[in-house]
Length: 222
Image (cartoon, rainbow, N blue to C red; front, side, top):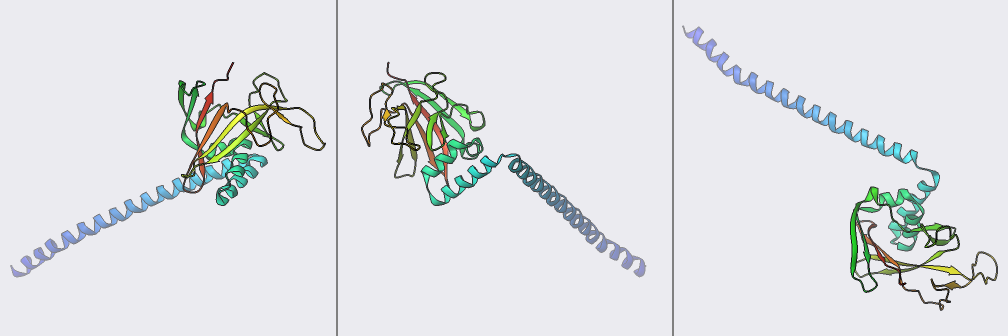
């Protein structure tokens, strides 16, 4: 009887140990499985990013590099040039939501909409050589319309870019000079002055750069 009881006691003591070992093995297997899933997801994301980078054209890759260097140097003018030059840069450095507003001559709100960054269709500025031009000129087909830009930086590191439409009179001394700037009414713009703005682009600071967040337009004065 003593031997039987001793064996029964031994089995009773071994049973919890065996169950505990099974649970630990199960948890270890679950952790390994979870880790494998995370590693697979990370690899898939890296592969997708690599494929997207490879799909970019050479000009976009260069623009992205220039934008990154401008961010590191906190050079908002160089950053804006890359932003205007490349859709890939605009896609990377836009806020998740971009606000588009139309205001009247006195600042009264006419309309406002919010777009997902990927579907924002209205960025108004492009670059041609070293000059800023409108994506859509005031008169369709006007290839001689350019933009005058005025940059401002706030104490909070917000960047404002005001733009207005101009032409040049062609009175050039040669080279790439297009002559003297003229406002929308054909009047000469004094040196160092800017015509009334027709729009404003706002860029908010991020941890390491800026992101495009708002596009404001003023109705043209008739």
